[in-house]
Length: 216
Image (cartoon, rainbow, N blue to C red; front, side, top):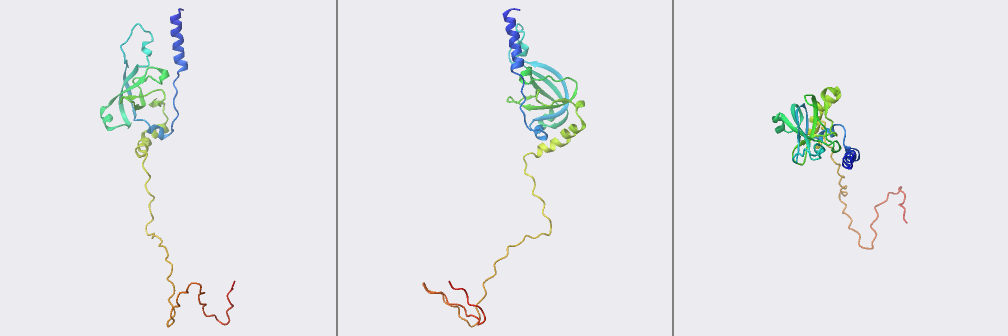
């Protein structure tokens, strides 16, 4: 084996081992499904490779270029989460990298499956190894019911504040009790004038049997 072939072999080994696909952890349950722009049941009908640069037939590694994508024409049989415009299209174009280390994946053709995709920075749909694409026949009944029946309503209401709890009819709000007004003075008795500065206020008349108040 010459040095050039050995270098190509080592480079390929490093790309597959040193730069493996790493899926970022995120929310689970319905929250995870709401992060996708498109969820639907359908079937991949055709596949072709999209190259951003001209094909170089002399380079045996050209088809593994990180700039290449697998492009699929996927028929929509049951729209679960997508825009009205996409629903009218009927067939969507979904991309995935040709590189495993870039989390690319290949979709099986002519298989009834559940697809998950997001809109990338170019405005195109893409999917990958980290997305839960699966053949419909491999899913259990609980997962099918969760995704098709509960996820659409959950995602549509996500972020909305819950409605206020209903009030029971016939209940009246308790009014705050006001302090009672001071008692009016006795008839025929003139109110005592306020004491001047340094003068002690007059004491009220004392009942003969009542004890004297405490004086400091």
